Every structure is written in C-alpha cells, then in structure tokens.
Length: 144
Image (cartoon, rainbow, N blue to C red; front, side):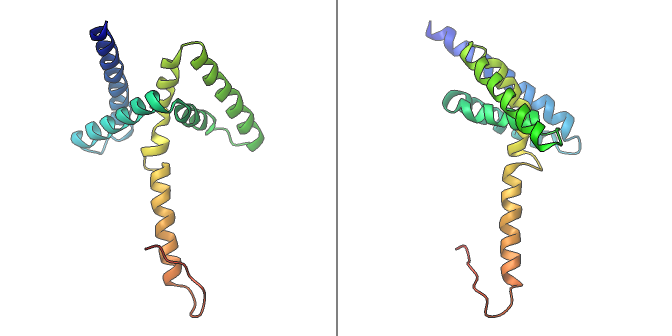
C-alpha cells in the first residue's frame, strides 16, 4: 500500500513539473534551458508543498489569477468570490487536483517577472532611493 502511495505522489509531482515546464517554455522563450528547468522545479516544489500543507494559498493564488483580466473592480471582486467558493467546493468534493492545476498557471503571480516577490524587491529599492533623496532635516527610517 505504501509503494502505491509513493508512486501516486511521485506521478502527481511529475505532472505538476511537466505542466510548469511547458508553461515556462512558452512564456520565457529567451531564457536558457537550465533556467527554465530550475524555475519549473522550484515552482513544482512550491505547489506541491502548498498542496500538502497550505491548500488555502493555492485557492488564493488561483482566485487572483482567474480574476486578474477583469478591469471593473466590483465585477473582479464578485468573480473572485465565486471562483474562490468554486475552488473550495472542489476541495470538499475531493477534486483537489483541479485546484492544483489552476495553481500551476497562477504560480507565476508569485515567481514571475511581475510577481509578488519582484514587486517586493522593487518597493524596497524605491524606499532606499527615496530616503537618499530626502531633504535635510526630515525624519527617515532605515532598514538595517
């Protein structure tokens, strides 16, 4: 029984890696093969760990990804709520694989060129630049 479980988990992680590799190969054509493989491996590991320990993070990423193209704020919130409820229903109905599939496409919100991690480093860089150009005598907070 334990061998079947290991085979099932390894097959699931391989499918997630394959989907991440396919998506990254299409999205980042100018990058090297090694970079695409390593990015895909990191994304597959992140999705697998979140599926195991924090499925709510996968639902949140999928909901943000699904509602991102909508420009009207009210409609975006409504679609986000409905899609989040749909993802939660999928988890309750034992169709968690579909939520993992959605998160393969949504993970770029975290690790991509316009993702959360990139935005965080841009904001930190802007804070440092704005403090360097602050007028003399103003109160400034530095991060050490």
